[in-house]
Amino acid sequence: MSMLVPNKVGLASLPCWLHAGWQVFLQAKGLSAAYASIFAVLGLAQFYAVVTAGLTPLVVALAGGFMLIGPALLCGFFNVSDHLQRNEAVRLGHFFAGFRLVPPVLWVVSLFEMFLFLIWLTDAGIVYGLYFGMTREMGLPEFFAGLAGEGNTWPYLFFSGLMGTLLAFIIYTTSAFAVPLLFYRRGSLAGAVSASVRAVFSNFPAMLAWGVMLSVAMFTAMLLLLPLFPVVFPVLAYASRQAYREVFPQ
Image (tube, rainbow, N blue to C red; front, side):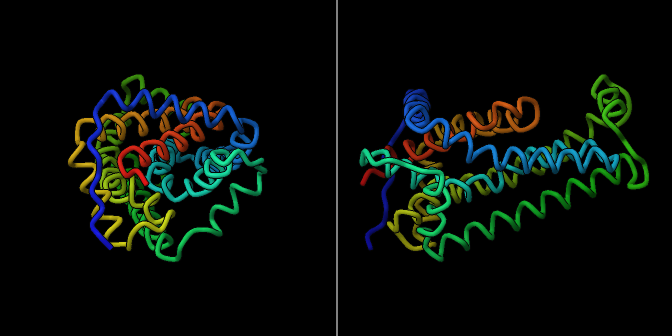
């Protein structure tokens, strides 16, 4: 199989990707929001467990960590997009059917993402212990007091966020286009990953801006505006498919 060569894209492409993602979302907004709500509920349950345990600062780590496993969840949206593109009716089951269409090699990428996610949580826990001690309980009032400038909350957020950003960048460069390339069976694991890395670095200003926007939007929706997550996540997922189609057209 010949080497996949990415197209050149610029910053002007980003609004087009978002517009395309929004248009696809509108075609199946109820089902898309319902599917994304599953992950919103799971995230809320995790946040509740962490806050109840008195480990509130780790909520930020969980919210940021979603960027590490998010790419593995895109296949359901890809499948629905394909049905809509063919003017076919879609059901909630089509989101889950997308995972049945995943080639085995794509699960390797997903396991790698999960592995980095576990590393991220472990590192965040170690930094938490260094700044707060594992025996100290910190509820929401203490956490918000820390955000106001008391204690070690900001140093903790800075250093744990620094490690999370590095891991997120690794996943972003290796899987941003590798996931759709593998889903549509356009290359081997090594070929898809290398093509994804080439696409990111050959379009670095645009892809860096796109990655930052994805991170900020998902982090904000997951941590601060959870009720909007069922809209933000599908729109960005569909927009990511549009980005793939522009960088690696069929």
